[in-house]
Length: 185
Image (cartoon, rainbow, N blue to C red):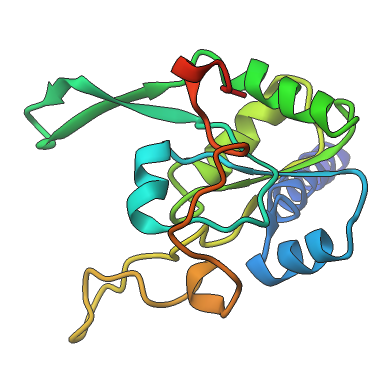
């Protein structure tokens, strides 16, 4: 019985360690991209419209949305447009890898707004689909929402944008997801 419990504990500890090593700080990602690490694909997984209004870092190699907003469907309960998983997500990742001369063993680092809604789930999805080295940027592009105080509701701490890393509103069309123009990843 004791050996069985130890085996369970070791198994759970390994799972926790695996999950913990999935996250990477914005600073570490930027340093690695600047160093030109050859086996890394840095992907912004946000909807292109969100990127247009929130900002973009040209350090990413490609924009391959994990979830897409469907502007034709309204979620009355949440008061927002419905989102659904991009059916071309895996194909887009494969295309971006191929364009960089990388294989499924490459480290794929995903970036979303906060790290939790699309960043980690997209990395989990990639791992479940054969990309064992998928990771995500902790706190994403803007960081988490501040819960209390005069700045409650704003994203002013953490993430790429609030870490002094380069970003702006100018988008690189060669990196953006443009399905109608045949440039979609």
